[in-house]
Each structure stands twice: as structure tokens, then as C-alpha cells.
Image (cartoon, rainbow over all chains, first blue to last red; front, side):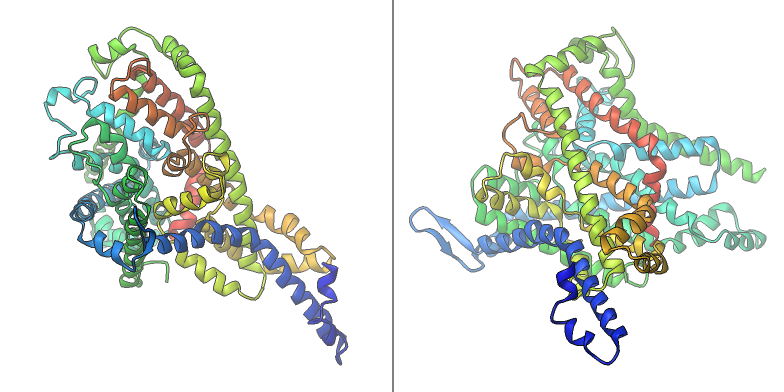
Amino acid sequence: MTEVKTSPAAAPAAAGPSAGTGTRRAARVKEAATGWLFVLPFAVLLIAFLLLPMAYAFKISLYRSTLIEGEVFAWFDNYKQAIDDPLVREGVVRVLIFGLLQTPVMIGLALVAALLIDAATSRFSRFFRLAAFVPYAVPVVIGTLMWGFLYSDSVGPFAWTGIDFTSTGTVLASLGNIVTWQWAGYNMIVLYAALQGLPRETYESARIDGASEVQIALRIKTPMISSALVLATLFTIMGTLQFFTEPLILQPLNPGAITTHYTPNIYAYQQAFSFQQYNYSAAISFLLGAVVFVGSYIFLFATRKRSALQ
Amino acid sequence: MNIKKGSVAAHVVMGLMAIYFLLPFWWLLVAATKNNEGLFQSASLWFSDFHLIDNLKVLFEQDNGVYLTWLRNSAFYAVVSGIGSTVISALAGYAFAKLRFPGRNALFALLLGLIMVPATALVLPTYLLMSQADLVDTVWAVILPSLLNPFGVYLLRVYVADSVPEEMLEAARIDGAGEVRVFTSVALPAMKPALVTVLLFSMVASWNNFFLPLVMLSDDQLYPLTVGLRAWYMSAIMGNSGGATFNVIVTGALMAIVPLIVAFLMLQRYWRGGLTIGAVK
């Protein structure tokens, strides 16, 4: 770092009236150089694997590849096509319905579980905390494979019910169950951690006023952890819009029910790798990414009083 | 009396939920002990003939022992991207929290915005860029993108700002330590709990990763477990002869999650610590 000390920025200061400012300025230059050195690897990765792919996706989404002319600049034609594409719309509507139904069920389940383990302190509640969180440690692919077997009418334990878990009408609920099973415990721990951070004295005065444990849980604890609830909901919705792995794994069980345009992400994947429609696929990906990005911001902005990310 | 009644009800609810969360594991454990016939013919939630050892033998011999290769690949990807991304995040998080340099605020604001960019939307353009750089179907295609961990940088910045006192850094500087030395011998030890959590989360994210390796890799010798098991499952469902049978896939799934669950149970206090940094801040 010696070259930094003698850099032109530091030199005039050293010749100034006070030698103290000189060394301070040299130290500041050195600090700045170190700072940049430390963030450099991260900044390079950020450019190479976030900004560059984003810019590249946007660029190719503006082109159209034709047999006769090759790559042609097409302005926003791909986006127009995506917005008009009934298959894209079907996928978007599906993930929206899925998110609206599955998110409250899962967050509700996680909240109930978190309130229970916060109130009950027994050996069983510790065991329960672990049991609920373990599915999170399982790769989504393997969790989905397991449920695929459990849903099966030949090897699954629910065959006796006669329900076809992968029919057109039921498969969305079956997928919702997998997501709930995998992530409810994770969200439970997030909410439980927030509950643990609350001041215990608050409950005491409510108890003296005659409030029951259930009332305390619903009227005092729940509102006080609303910021954690907001964040958990946000991450769930962001994940839902990008729904990909679970339906892709279950697809071979019933390709008629889980189509190649089942979710926007599966459709984009299909367009790129089955039909080599990279330009169109990039437009769909970019559109979806933009919706998730803008949606997250609007959600955070609308709930900013309650969320921690101010 | 009332409290007791409530407590019993609470434990009943927790018991039912625990059954829901654990049932698939029980099924998997039982199913892995059956041969393919037994899988289809016996009661699905209880043991019949014991074939776990045979299943393991077939699992490790299937397709010239490719399962072991997948297991090794998964471990390799997880360890390299985990350690790499933690080191890079630690350097950046520390710099954002404690060092003043021009462009710091702009870069950090950019990072905050980019945390919201959905990872899956980037996989396809990253693939196209990688293929232009001739890196598709190499280990680099899986490892390099996994080194980027904006959320890890954010968490470490928050942690360092709160728990590494400025005076300690200043004292080390006055004692004549260089900036790198200040970081490695003063800041890093104080960051340890947060580093462990970031390391755990990024290793698990990489171990569980599916979309990125699915897109990047076509050589099955480079597959991680997730992509490999899915390939076996696909061919078994399609009824391809000579492929892995369902009992082998089930045993493979069990073998893939056992180390993870053991590690998870041993390290659970770090998990919860990590979630707390993210949730309550």
C-alpha cells in the first residue's frame, strides 16, 4: 500500500500547514483503497452474474430470430407476444391463484405453530420445533419426489382414499401441500424468533386484566410481530411467482395436468431448451422478473410502517 | 385447571402437526427397506421383508456407481461455493460496514435493490453468457454463479455494524496493524457467529440447488444429486428398462437427506441464530 501513501492526492496535504491532516488524509486514502479492494470480488460477481445477465436478457428479448433474416431487432414485439400469449396468461393466473390460496394457509399454520411453541415450554414443544423445521433441510427436488411417491395410487399410503392427487383438478392443491410441508417450519422459526424478542412484561398486565392465553396470542403477540409476518409473506409470494421445481418434478406423473406452460417459469424454460426460442424465453423471464421485482417493492412500500426494511 | 386444559389442547395440535411434518420421512425410511416388489405390494407405512442392504448395494452399483459421483459432486459444489461465497461476503460486508470509500453508498443501494431480483430469472441469460464463454457443462458453470450472495453481504454488514466496535479497529490501527491485519485478526473473530450462519445457509442453498445445474450441465458425471435423482425418476416413470427401479431411487433419496438432517440437528442453534439476524433486524 506504499504507492497509495505517496499518491498525488495525499502529497499536497502532507506539505500543508499541519502534518497531522496529512497523515489523516493519507490514512483516509489508504482506507478507501482497502475498501475497494475488499468489495472488489463481490462487485465483479455482481456485475458478471447479476447485472450482465440482466442486461443481456433485456437485449436479446428485443430481438427476434427468423429463418430468413437471422437476428432482427424487433423492439417490444416479444413482450407484446408474451402479454397476448394465452399460455403465459394461464400460467400467471395459476401462480396468482396458487399464491393467494397457499400463502395464507402456510403463514397461518406457521403462526399457529410459532404461538404454540412460544406459549408451551415442554420437552415435546422442543421436539415439535425440530420436527417442523426438518423438512426445510430437505432439497426441494427430494421433498417433491417423496410426495410424488406418497401421492401415488400404487405405493402411497393414501391409495385407500381413492383420491387422484395428480388429476387436473387436484394437482394444484397437491403442489400447495408440498410447498406448505417444506416451508411452514422455516416460517415458524422466523416468527418464533420474532416472538422471543418481545418484552414478556406486556403479557403480565394483560393476564392481570383477565385475558386468556388465546387472547394474548391473537391480540398482543400477533400484532407485535407484524413486521416478521410481512417479510415472511413477501418471501413466500416472491417464491410462488417463480414456481418451477415442484411442478417440473411431478410433471411425468400426469403431463396432461401439469402442462409445459403450467407456470411462467416452466414455460420460459420450455421455450428456451425445447424450442430454442431464446429471445421469446428471455422476454418472458424478464417480464416475470420485473413483475416480481416491482411487486416486492410495492408490497414493501405499502407495508413499510410494519416492515423492518425501511 | 383452565390452563391445563389449554395446554393439553396445544399439545394435541402440536402432535398432529408433528405427524404431518414427519410422515414423509417415516414412509421414506420404511420404503427404503423394501425391494421393488415389496414397495408395490406391502402396506406402505410398515416394514415387510428387509432389503435395505441389497438396495444400498444396487444403489451404489447402478449405472457404474454414478450415485457416488453425484454425492461427491454435491458435496464439492456445496463446500466450494459455500466457503467461497462466505469469504467474498465477509470482505464486502466488513468493507460496507467499517471502511469509507467513494461509491460505497451507491454500491450498497444497488445491492439492496438487487436482492429483490428473482434468481430464477437470471439462470437462462447466465446460461447463454456462459455458453459464449465456453463454460457450459463445466464445474465453473455451477460454482461461479453460486459465489454471488447479496443477502449474505447484507447480513454480514448489519452484523458487523452492530457487533464490531470501531474502537477495537482503531486500537489495532494505532498499534501499527495494516488494514488486512485489522480485518483478519480483529474483525473476523468477532464476526464468527454470523460467518457460520452465512456459511451454513449458502452451503445448503448450493446442496439443494436444482435449476442452475439442470440448465448448465448435460454430462451426468457432473450432476449433483438433485439433478441425478430427478433423471433416474424420470426414466423410471417413463418405464425405461435397465434404469434404476423405484426402490433404488427411494434409497438414494434417503441416503441424500440423512447426512443433511444429521448436520442440521447438530448445528441447529446456528440455524436459528441466522434466521434471527434476518427476521428481527
